[in-house]
Image 1 (cartoon, rainbow, N blue to C red):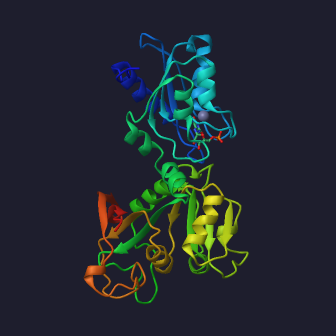
Image 2 (cartoon, rainbow, N blue to C red; image 1 turned 90 degrees about the horizontal axis):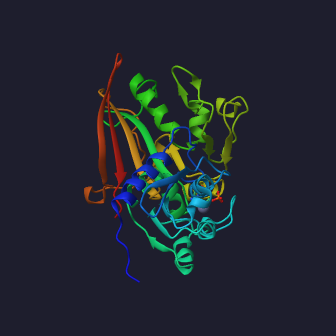
Image 3 (tube, rainbow, N blue to C red; image 1 turned 60 degrees about the vertical axis):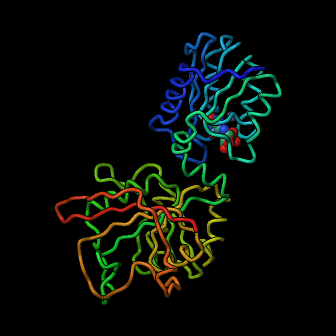
Amino acid sequence: MTRQAITEAERSAMRRALEIAATDGVPLGPNPRVGCVLLDPAGLPIAEGFHRGAGTPHAEAAALAEAGAAAQGATAVVTLEPCNHTGRTGPCSEALVAAGVRRVVYAQPDANPLAAGGAGRLRAAGVEVEGGLMADEAQALNRAWTFSVASRRPFVTWKFATTLDGRSAAADGTSRWVSSRAARVDTHRLRAACDTMLVGTSTVLVDDPRLTVRDEADGELPVQPLRAVMGLRELPADRRVLDDAAETVHLRTRDPEDALATLHSLGRQHVFLEGGPTLAQAFLRAGLVDEVVCYVAPMLLGAGRSAVADLGITTIADALHLHVSDVRVLTGHDGEDTNVRLTMRRK
Ligand code: AOF
Ligand code: ZN
């Protein structure tokens, strides 16, 4: 059987599927964002659907429901390989076959071992299948989901604020407002895109942070990330992290790998690490930081606590290297901070 090349109509359907997958208001995680467009044999769109969050129909099922009998002989263009499992809903591979879909074009292969295998199942049923169209765009849409299903742990973003000379506190321990207001607003935007805030018990004991996502206009957002505190020390009941503004878990371990394993088992995909230099040290030493977000204040201290504790590196050849992915200057009335985003370079 000769394979049919991907058509222009399928390309534009994939662009549309990516667009509807990213519909505002679709909650991030634990499920991926997925879009699906059904085309008739002439390449004209007949129905579309997108996933609206855990427990609701998958994108393919939503599109099939809208198409009804018109799905017979159609091409399904979908941003993720159709699933092959019965989870919260039934397998999409079977639903597509049962509806008489003739061809499936998908973007990203499903890395979820529980759900994968849909392409094979479709081919076995005689459906033409093409994968990989705009796969990078689809992966970018579900960056943390893709990472966590493939790596079996959450993606870790370490955020810190520092002076120009790499200090996170002055010699007397004072550290309040190293970063500007603009940097703090920016931090809340990034917190909102994660599903878990992680700090150590010492941060809770010393700084007593709330660890919630707030915005200037509306205060605390309705959906809050989980607050996770790791370490062996007890948390006094009066700490703000134990208030009822969001859920909190105490991970009784000092080992980053254990902490991430527990968070993974709780369905968490993206950890925002906001602890102090010791927690950062533990995660960096364990090779468990994937992305770094740094706010650099135009300030010099010359002495004081370093932004990260000793990494055991004594010679320049052993330095950890990162890639800069973005640099911005955030300007506000109380100063301007430089925001640098980086990814870790894997050795
Ligand atoms: C979705 N939405 O549109 C597609 C998904 O157990 P479930 O039913 O929640 O299924 C989750 C898995 O199904 C998910 O991790 C992914 O591998 C696959 N496809 N999931 O939430 C969708 N097509
Ligand atoms: Zn499915």
